[in-house]
Length: 380
Image 1 (cartoon, rainbow, N blue to C red):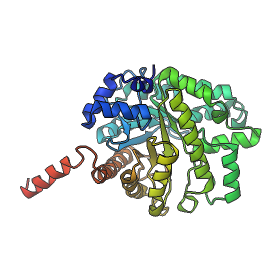
Image 2 (cartoon, one colour):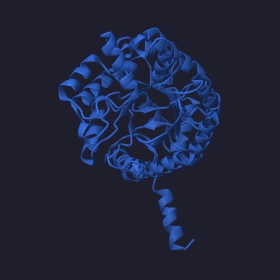
Image 3 (cartoon, helix red, strand yellow):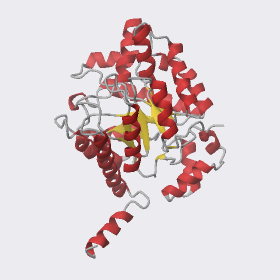
């Protein structure tokens, strides 16, 4: 029985008790909102070193995620482990391994084994990269994609970004409207390339039931990815993005019916005046599912300082109801983050999340600020 189904039956698990104590809320509130799908607890029992559980969603403190991982140019496992340690120490609630270079299986297993916080992945990266080496991305089979998803679940991945909402209809709407930066999501771009070449529907959408079976088997939390997210302010809140969101809302409903926990991913690049509307749309269309945003960046002209632009957007998104912020680092749009970039990105995103928690009245959020004010009064 999955965690969601346990909540529906009114059963309190040790994970629920841990989160309730950590958040300073009643267990019954937590159980009720997990049952509704407005709170999730990413947790794979195969992740043996998972010690710092995180609850994400309604009425809880805003959580943050740090992305790490190798590339084809930089394959050092040692560096990624150090980034993991630095991110956790600085206060990241979760980690995502986005490795695309070196021995991807080995890197992921080492990170899972070492990480005390939930670990997420984007399985389409590994599937596409490995197929590209042998027969080309466009020749990737649906069975191989699902094999990679199950392999990662067996390794102990707690949550996965899956780009199920990139459909042929969404691509049509995107083409009809036009964009400056087209598709900036790596996962979205890989799937669109495959779909256009093969003239077929996205297999992650067409065979969504198969995905749900894997998620149920391992109790994986699905983070339904925004493969058509805007990559600049001019493309924000367009028809392609909203079409994908509508599809994700329908898929989230199907997942919950099968007892699978779901997060919805969001943009991206948004002007300040779009942030409230985007959060309210997600909450309405996706039945209050936890909302996970990248930033959002509130300007396109801050390379080298994108973590600051993202923190501004993150604080505002969190205030309006976003539940989960993906960090940005000073190296966003420029290169892989260094260890110092990771530390700074986590800290500034943590500040943004805390600012949002104060504004929306999260339990205990103002306590540390009051302690700081008293200390300053006492010249301590």
